Length: 228
Image (cartoon, rainbow, N blue to C red):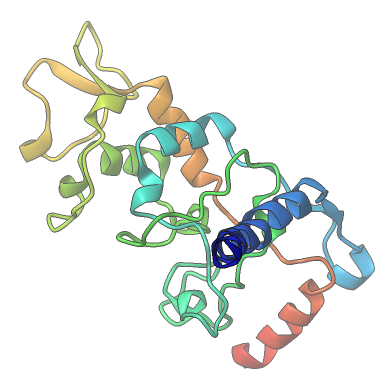
């Protein structure tokens, strides 16, 4: 009986402690977070961090379509990976960024109903995708027909987020401009649905590398020698 009791207590501790430390305590900490004001004199910027929440309705479409199964939204610390130095993964879009994109912190996800860290990284990280995203029109084309942009793409086509309709009078100014191989039949056009628009707005809003209050000036100073 004693051995059985020890086994049960050990089993409870083995599962309970990780659950407490990895889920409960971080969740309690997250609920207490509030936006932090920048100090104009120290940080050189005004406003609050994070500056604005993401498009919530678009995030729901992102979740429903399973985008977080193949895309992460988390720049890892340097000791865990080279995420910060990857081309286009931060605000600096140069092939060799002068300063790396900073790792994400808990407050970056403030205001989001879900922190979509991602399941696995099949496609590129999207934490700061808003900086490197093309125009909304080009992004719609990529969502509707990824292989019309890159013939090697393994991304699924989200055709269900778009409407194939017969052209009545002048063509819609929202109609996608697709290559001939991927274009609809003559007399028809493809236009985004409201859900597609919300998803694109959400993707364009992903900019999780704003300077952290108290560190903005230090980051700017560190970047100066690299520019010389």
